[in-house]
Image (cartoon, rainbow, N blue to C red; front, side, top):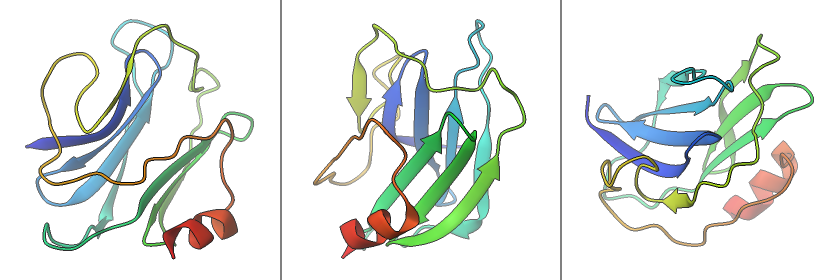
Amino acid sequence: ATLENYISKELSFQAYLLSNRTSQFGVWMGSSGLWTGWGSADTALPTLTDWVHYAFTYDNATRRANTYVNGALAHSVQEPSASAVVRTSNQPMFIGRNGSANVYHVKGQVDDVRLYNRALTADEVKVLAR
């Protein structure tokens, strides 16, 4: 499958889009090559000609991952492994491409990127999507 990375921080987390327009996301589990992997196969993103507000949140305390599209909850996963936490990493963060190699570039434009030190609530995401 063709990938497009929205955001990637090696040894921490990543969120990306597959060629079938479904989003995937994951958190590094602290060991070489071990990543969680969740997907929203039931929620395809709009076509490439549409602007989309995309938000991904992950709460380390509850291990709940949420994906929002245009302010609405598109997918939610409860991660069972206590090893799956967003870790600090001395690796650079990349917007619009993969973190471990210069591949999987976004096929479009990225605008108004925001990063928070906590998981936003559904209401906060809805306000940002307006």
